[in-house]
Length: 293
Image 1 (tube, rainbow, N blue to C red):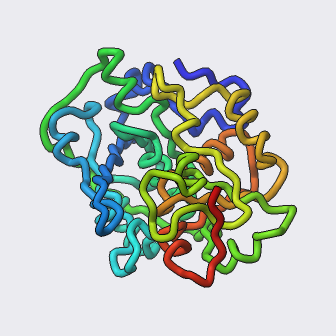
Image 2 (image 1 turned 120 degrees about the vertical axis):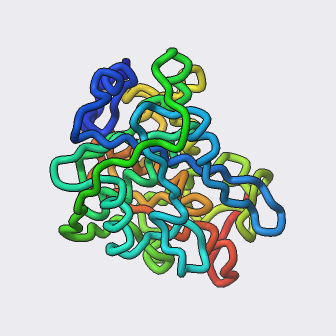
């Protein structure tokens, strides 16, 4: 079970036992969001949708979402950028998401793929979505039911965008935040990437000047793949002063940053935004300040 104690918004997490009980409900849509990033020194990484893994085993009734193809702006030179509202609505409609539906999002690896789609849904005004705590790792370890094959399509629906929340920022807003004591800019990459001493780089090594580090990977209990308890998450964000300031999260391409952003919203933070282009843009523009060490 997920320990929801201390979360301001426990409704945004669902535990494996609850999801198993609810499988088959007509208004429920379960979406596997997994993507694999394969390191490639020439282009940092190759994007490989995990559809083959999905067909080998998935939660019964789940559908697969290709985050790059279906819900990213493929006209942009950078990967995983916020799509136009019309494209996002069309993708959700194809997946049977509309009025009266509820969504559970999961991935087979880290939760950042599920939290990325959760963040996009929130931007486009859809709030009835939850992330499966522990994802497919926890689900399968517990011996819960698994289906194979391409998955079954849900009945088509009409997803309506009723507004677009300003939950993404660009480089100008991040630049203005440098030196602003009221803004905490958070890097969700590893400590090595933050320091510029190791790991994948997206251009120049290191971090956005003045930014602090809460790695997305350290929000998860390695024994269960579930999010850490609320009090421990709160401690980790409090150490960098993120709980009482405006927060901008970033990473390499706006994916891991969504896990930090999601965790802060779970804790009740009301002013979190995500730098969509992240260091894929910042590290390749020599006019933008970076630090190492």
